[in-house]
Amino acid sequence: MASLNMTIPFSISREEALKRIKNLLTETKKEHGDKIDNLQEQWDGNVGTFSFTAKGYDISGTLTVEDSTIELNGKIPFAVSLFKGAITRAIHEKAGELLA
Image (cartoon, rainbow, N blue to C red; front, side):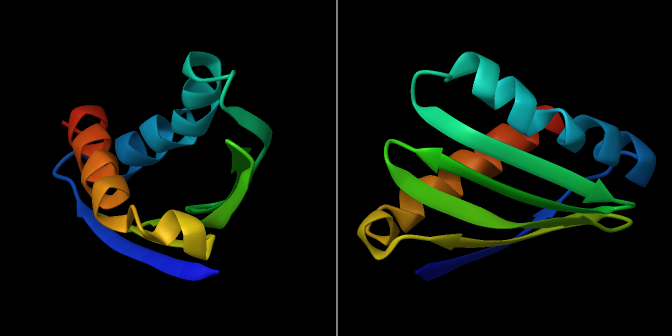
């Protein structure tokens, strides 16, 4: 497994960011249910753990919502790590929309 670590800044309140990010995986599953299976998401305060299977690849990690950033620490299969740059850009783009 390869690591995917990102810091995503935001300027809304921590509480609002947390509320929005908690719905993200559920909404993604609704939008892309044909590509995502076995979605698991659990939150303990401002720290969430997640795992899912996307197109046959297992993805997992944690999201920590801080005062002005979200720390994403994930594990992706080595085969998927070839697309790490594209994945990072897509996450930043989606987060920018979500946390604006």
